[in-house]
Length: 146
Image (tube, rainbow, N blue to C red; front, top):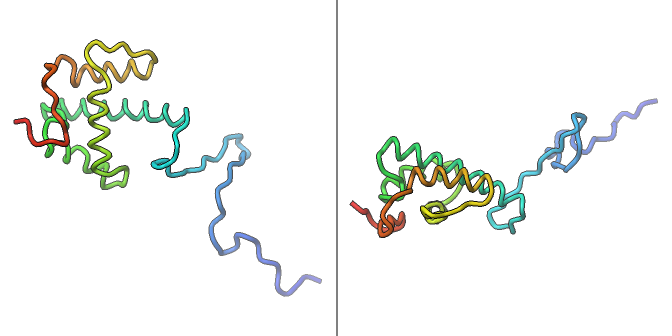
């Protein structure tokens, strides 16, 4: 005879199941999402950052073509450029200022990138900042250059 009070399953109406790194029927692994902002980077993280840099450089190039100036040239332009990302909790204002500085100073006109991702980044970088006079260092953390 069946029990009047069946045993409750572990995930029956309680907390959602925890993600595990298991293989599903399709053969693909579930991806565990974690906050990597304070964790140590590994080789995989570096590759993601480089690809992200290329996407960000393309956004800066599009902004420059639209406004005629880079977001780094003026604090108001930088704020306008970064605000959608900051509001989506992708980063904070200081982090974006640091990121923009790093992107601008990553290469110079005589750079010779070694891997494919860096070569793509360098080509976009040249379209944005290539040929600027060496003394023209618009710092996004400093006042307007106009």
